[in-house]
Amino acid sequence: MMNWYPWLNQPYRQVISQHQENRAHHALMIQAMAGMGDEALVWGMSRWLMCQQRDGLKSCGECHGCQLMQANTHPDWYRLEAEKGKSTLGIDAVRQVTEKMYHFGQQGGAKVVWLPDAAQLSEAAANALLKTLEEPPANSWFFLSSRDPSRLLATLRSRCMTLHLTPPDEGQSLLWLKKQSSHDEQMLLAALRLGAGAPGAALSLLETGPWQARQKLCDALPAALQQDILQLLPALNADDAAARIGWLLSLLLDAMKWQQNAGQWLSNIDRQDVVQLLAGYFSASALNSSTQAWMRCREQLLHVASVNRELLLTDQLLSWADLQKPALVG
Image 1 (cartoon, one colour):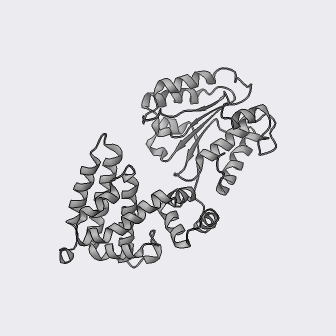
Image 2: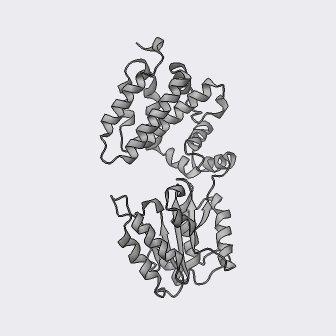
Image 3: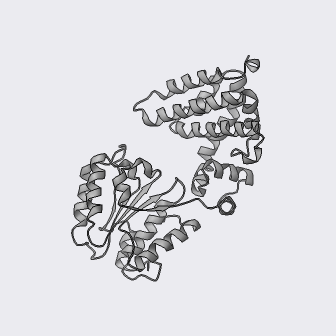
């Protein structure tokens, strides 16, 4: 069963009432950060579209269409994504699905296609999908999820209506997190800010594994800065190294805020000890250079094929140590 989030109620109502009034757009681009619940929203909307006995804004949960959806076996619901281990969705996979869209739905009702990550589309696949979106088959609905629509083909974007899932305000999110987690308020707030305000992302971060990894990174920083910077390598060198660099970047940004007397805007509100330490160890310009360098390092990790992670991180750590204030080294 998929988790439903309270902040999805409003966008759900908005889209479903458009369908009820027969003015819904056939292609919806959902722009959402990780942890906002776009998957649950698409699932809810698809359930409604496939239901044969709708009850206002709700699907009945009992008709044949609903049963097929619940069993994940509905023949007219397609999930289009790259195969396991691949990062690109090719033209053949797209064509296989779009050709079926021109036939009568096997259940005689709506046909729905969902792309959990539209950025996976190869250029050829995006163009093939574009052709279908330009002349959509009857009773066919397309949902495209994207973290960053600006990276997609402009022509593809222009064929879709965009629905932006914005994070709820911090107070609301905090109330929701308190119901889900027993952590203290400072930790909840830190997780929320590190997750860019997306409550689902905050909750995932608070799970034992990621949260411990973040604490380990924070705990390793003082000794690494005072003695040997390479003590930080084990805390960064993991499969989720890009996320860990993200945590380090947020600490560096917080150190900049600290130097500017903007302590009330910290993200790592639960680790002010580490923020203060960084603010003392680096000058303002060194913090700025550090941030740029770590961002470049993260980009390489994410986008350079078969990059040697350990070597890249070691190299970056050593050059980072050179930026420390000279009086404090040794």
